[in-house]
Length: 353
Image 1 (cartoon, rainbow, N blue to C red):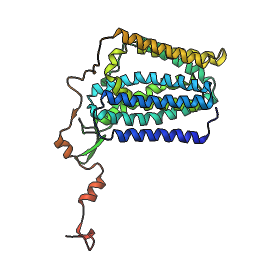
Image 2 (cartoon, helix red, strand yellow):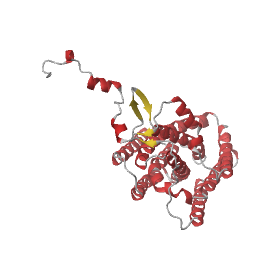
Image 3 (cartoon, rainbow, N blue to C red):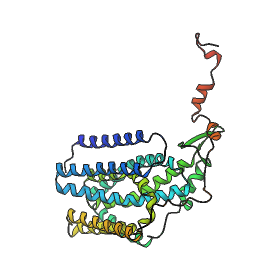
C-alpha cells in the first residue's frame, strides 16, 4: 500500500481539526445529554466509516476490508473501555459536567500513546518476525482470561495507580470545577480530577496492550492500523455519554470480545506458516461474533431502561464550595507577583500615584 506523505499530513490535520471542533463545541462545562451524545456519535462513526470508504475506493477492496476489520475491532474493544470509565467516574463521584473535560484530555493522550505503541509494534514485526508468535499467544491468553473473569469488575478503590498517585502527588480533597491543579497556601496541589485523568490514561494503556496486537492480526499496514485506531478512539467521548447508563444491558459483550481476541489470535498463528484467512472472511467472523453477543445481551435484558451506576454513599472526594474556589491563589506565582508586587520605583513617569 503506497501512502504519500501528504496523505499522512492530511489525516493528522483532519484529526487535529476535529479535536478542535469538539473542544470548541464543549468549551462550556455542561452535562452531555443522550441526544447530544447520539448526534456526536453519528458524526464520529460517519467520519470513520467515510474514511474507510475512501480507502476502499482509492486503494482497493482488500485494503478497505483490512481497515474496516481493524476499525471494528478497535471500536468494539473501546466499548469495554467505556464501561470501565463509567465505573471509575461513578466511584470517584465525578460531577457529570466535568466528565467531558477528563475524557477529552484522556483521548488526546490515548492518540499519542497508541501512536507510539503502533510505531513500536511495526518496528518489532519488521525486525523480529517471531514476535508474531508472542502476539498470537498473548491474544489467545487474553481472550481466555476475559472469559474466566467476565463477571468481575474494576475496583478503583483498590487501584495501585491511585494509591501511588496519592502517595507521591499532594492532592486536595475536593473538585474545584474543571481545574486539574490549584494553589492553596502557597502550595501547588492536584485536584481529584487529575487523579481521575491519570487512571483513565492507565486504563487506556491496558486496553491498548490488547487492541494493538489484535489489529496487527488483520493488517500489518501501519497507515491502516493508525487510522483505524484514531477514528475509533475519536468517538469514545460521545460513546461514553451514550452508553454509560446501559452498562447493565451488555451482559454478553465481554464474552463476545474475548471470542474476537481468540479468533484474531488464531488468524495470526495461521497467517505465519499455515494459511492466510481472507480479510473478507475475517471481517465477517468478527462482525458476526459482535452482532450475536450484542443481540443476545439486549434480548436477555429487554425491558430494562437506562440506569446510572450507583455513586458511593460516602464519595472519596467532595465538591469545593464557591468560597473555597474564590479563595484560591493564582496558579503560577509569577502571575500573582506581576499583579500585586508593583513597587513605586517601577512606575513610569506617566503612571498615576
